[in-house]
Length: 287
Length: 275
Picture 1 (tube, rainbow over the protein chains, first blue to last red):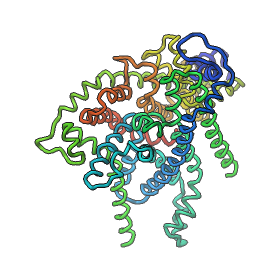
Picture 2: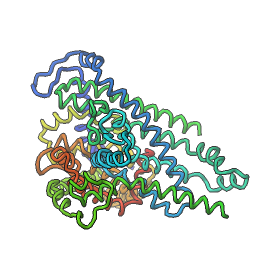
Picture 3: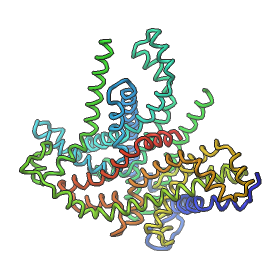
Picture 4: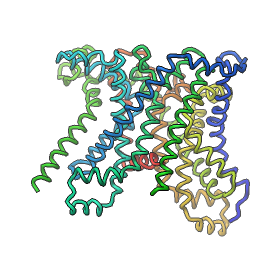
């Protein structure tokens, strides 16, 4: 069918223009700014070569933040996927009220990060504290004021919020397993453990790639929850990368440096996502 | 049969316990939203009794959050951005599928590649660009959501349209429909299921988005609910009586949305994750 050339441009223009305006232009100017002394106030912007990047290498706050983000993301990947997979297994069994349970487990996912952070701030600082006092358990008190418990609090929040999301992904995959396979295994005398390890786990493996990377990128880029639960405290110990970038831009007005940090952040996030793409394409070929 | 039954009861108990655990933070907010600040400090986990029960946290939080205005801003921005995304991204995806020339591939790949870019990376230049273009206002942020939402939406629509047969469109063209008539009367209705999925995914992130409104429309009267909640906490950081009520007020619209659209939400989330 012959369609006029202008038709293509008319149809694509609105989305494309908005996309170029808010993503492409800022992405490229952002890379440029990372090589300048941009401070956001004066109009004079001059190139400074790789000085911003060199400064970052000596910025111990940035590397502490980087390390914390990486460790946190690794822990979150484990806890989200273990809990999510477990919940998926549970609600795919013949259990009464399982669809209600599924709805409950998924609910926190819809509530935004800011609301969740403040909700858990109340739980940790008030509810935990009062239980700790009543039962005389010291480690339940002052939960967000030590680095270790603040980090653990963030991990609990993220698990509460996102394990339902992981659950949904795993449910889809578990339900794809043909009933005939499960029945055949049952007739052959496979017990529950064997069905789990020999049938369900191998057949759910493709979803693990998705679940792993989704949770990894999500926790790597986390900002709202971080801001509203701990605000990076105590003493910047829970300041994740996104917040570190935000602070160097808006608290310290070092926009060039913030932008250089953002470029490094982009490289790490893109590397993670491209690895995922590579792995899932490879698997598709194998299958 | 006895063992199966025992197992079912065991799993049911375990599941119910977990469900209660998942709901407990919201439950704790709820019981404390009916207490005075003093009573919250005295006893967090206890139920409010007849003497201490009070309603007034809700109207007060409603007022302090400027709830009606913030809700209106959130709803207006979310709905208009989602409608724009649906129409313009469907148009773009359709053109990208139906025009099989090289530029279609290049544009499609740029949309896909942009999904790798974290927001922090474009945030600072975006603020100065939008400031220069006088777009730091509510209509402006709708355009920004179109730009940010386009990538995922176009990828999902593109995948769906690829499988829509061409015959209907050809017939329409022969009958004298121009491109717009063909698209809006023939193609768009065929996309209903995927449009619902795309709408749900966009509503969920735009409604809850915090950083973009904070950077772009942080002015009295323009603030969205997440932004207003954040400011409210900055102002009344230790007022947990108002805060618990305020947090619950903000959760009500989300829970209502969930109750009505649960089926579509779960479907949308599953498809969005797998893309």
